[in-house]
Image 1 (tube, rainbow, N blue to C red):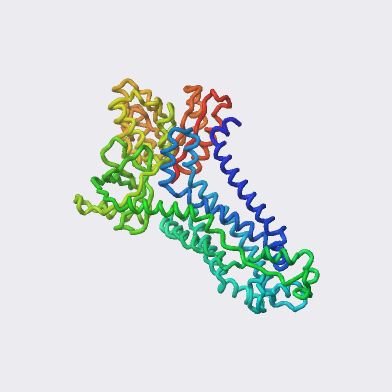
Image 2: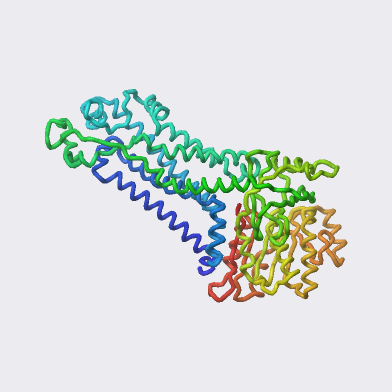
Length: 570
């Protein structure tokens, strides 16, 4: 239990508080509309559907207040930097911003569904009450407002029966039109956010996600029509609905039961979302300002395995290890921004990214940089680049531990290139103040060509550690997860050579996948009583495996070994 609390306790606490607030708001606002006499006559018309529509509306306001905060990247980077003196456990929560963003989005979808279904019943019953035969309480209530000095409780004022009446409400009333628009926008946003769409059709995800602007505009004005109406406080003092409803035929004829007066609920959503909307507006202004600053591409390097490296310079640019930036290339798309991890070290006089060519945008960048041509590309012909960032990630905390495990899968090795470069620079100058004493580095890749661009860095670091008699500082294991029979035969023939046939490193390449349970147990045995940081940039399946191993191999004793799992999210 202690192991689980160490890794997941605070995250679960935050989620439980959030869920608890959702439950509380739903229950509270359900009672607000289902119990007080103010909405007695509204309930006569609509029944329980009134409370079932208003309770999720309150939860929608709450979650729409939260949904923008996890994507305020500059705010999160500021909080991450200002909390450097706090526990890494607290900072790790900021690294799970996108996970929380997705959870809030699904909660919005759930409450939208409940709210919409309940209002479908409300509209049907409002229309039905308006057109039904006279003589019933519902008919009398629906007729209020037809005469002077009367106020209505039934928002539907026409006499068109269902289903045309329901369609009339949906497409002529402000609440109906905005409800349809924001529901369609939400459906498009959520369906285009699936993993398949994001990976295969990123542009679809990018553009549809910006429908959030329409969603929030519609949300703010959705309640301006005030179709949910209740009895006024002055009317309640003169007309007790729990008594007078029995004598509805005598309303206005008896002093004890004058005609009830009603008013609409004022719109409240803007009070919930105005703060986050202002913060997000400031966020976008900061991004726009930074994107206008000049960026110069100083070098383009073509690496194997469809990967290019862009080395750039920008006035005043400062970074930390493992951070990422957003990049826009107007020559490819004037609107699209794509995230890339920085592969340079803070000690270098430039910053760099590695881009794997896997889609239309990256293919366009590849061609815009002249990488599809054989001749040398002049610097002035390189495309203009806009950069937003850098933004903080979990890898910033690498130097907060004495022992770390770095796990990269494929191109996911990029944040650790920055870490290892920074370590190399620190050892070249002065590493006496370096808290980090041991790195276990794992790289999993399907193809041998993918190793080539990263091998030079490992060779330099390997040589540097040996020169300083600290070869044990870095233990690295490179796993080739895909090969054919010809390659396997070639590897077997050269296995006894001093250096690896693929990477040129003294450490031989391993084939297959790591036995993570053995790896964790071995490391735990070498570092008793330590807090070991586990950092991953890779797929969700591998993240689940490492997270489970971190929990199962951590000791319940606070003085024992503890593995702290961190994953890159951007």
